[in-house]
Each structure stands twice: as structure tokens, then as C-alpha cells.
Length: 176
Image 1 (cartoon, rainbow, N blue to C red):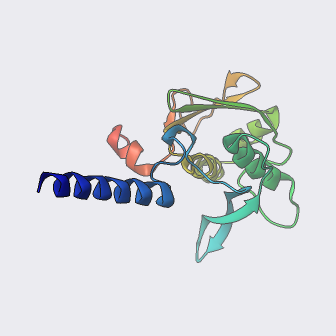
Image 2: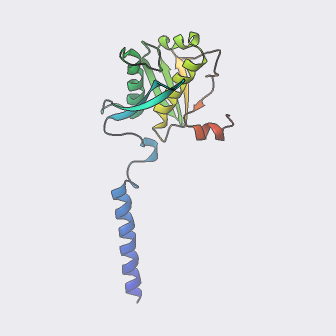
């Protein structure tokens, strides 16, 4: 009876381990989780009734690049696409991105400063496009945006503190 119990235990453990490996449950660590295969999501503004909202689309991104950098670079490329609108000001380039302790520090070129004169709605669309791009990665919890290494300053939103990339994180941190 004891041999049967041990054999049954070995079979059950083997089945569970096989399932986890085949389903990705034992795959890459959480700090690397995110889009793979060179496809990332970026958001563009679209008119929906009387509102402008962000609509996600899948785009190709370099496979040999860090996935977070690739997603942000793809988002910033939409700024120079004259055929469709972008939430990001034209000419804005990604200078650097680093993720430390769940906070993505995103440094962009000075063209992003055009948002200062674009109003609350435009700034909100840009912030939400950035948040959506970063929310694809489970290890990114918040973002801190810098323009040429300095905190982006605006009359509409406080960008000086890290901003949650997911709405559930924002609510948990006391945001409305």
C-alpha cells in the first residue's frame, strides 16, 4: 500500500509540473513578463461620439530590443505618423527608459513640452497612452516622466511623483 501511495504522489507531482511548464506557469519570471514576439500595443486617439478616447492597436516592435523600450519607441513613432492622430506631440523621441523597483523612468525629448500649451485633454490622452503602453508589463507599476532629464512640469497634472500605470493601482494609492 505504501509503494502505491508513493507512486501515486510521484505521478501527481509529475502531472502538475508538466502542466505548469506547458502552460507557461513555470516559464519566464514575472519581472520579465510582457508582450513577446515583436508585437506590442500602442494607443491612438479616436473620436467616439462627442469624446476622444484611446484605442489600442498592435504594432511590430524590434525583437532584439528590451520589450519596455520597444513598446515606448513604437508609441513615440506614432507621433510622426501624419496619416493618423497620436496622443504624443510630433517629433517626440524616447531618449532612455529604465525600470527599477517597479517604477519606469521615461526620459523623452523636449518636443514633449508642446503638451504644456495643448490643454488638459491632450495632456490626459498623452499620459494615458504612456500608462497603457507600460501597463503591458507586469513588473512596471508606476511611471515617472522626464523631459531631457528634468521632471515634466505642467499646469494641468502633477508629473513630479510616479504615476500608477494601471487604474487599480491608482485607486489603491488614493487617486480618485
